[in-house]
Length: 162
Image (cartoon, rainbow, N blue to C red):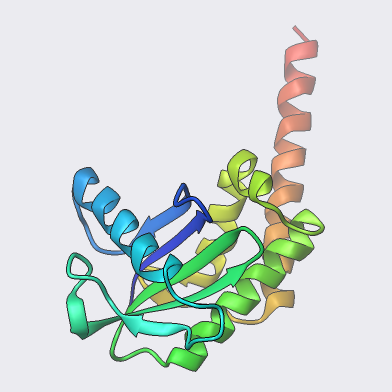
């Protein structure tokens, strides 16, 4: 099961954090700091799996991550998850973001956080992987965008009729 999904930049600023277990806000911030410290100090040419930090569950949990340009994508998982499967999930997530934002960058994560959370919710819910087919995820995101545009059009039409 996935315990948390974290995205932060090279300086440790969180750009997305999704916890599938309840923690108070202070503990979440400590987990983000500890995870960044563990992941950022590793060389680029080493394995992308490591034991979880003390706050996230220690040796019972694994941190699986990928570093793309200025962003770290980190999944905190328990021993029931496949490391290679999670690496593939990270790749699908990044490629989906790339397609939805046309070459995703850190600013897209900042200014479109709701859309990023929607994409993530299409892939993972309650710590369980729902969908790994990028085309299916994009189809659902496009359907949501169309619905939002039609609601906006209806809302604007009713306001102009007054």
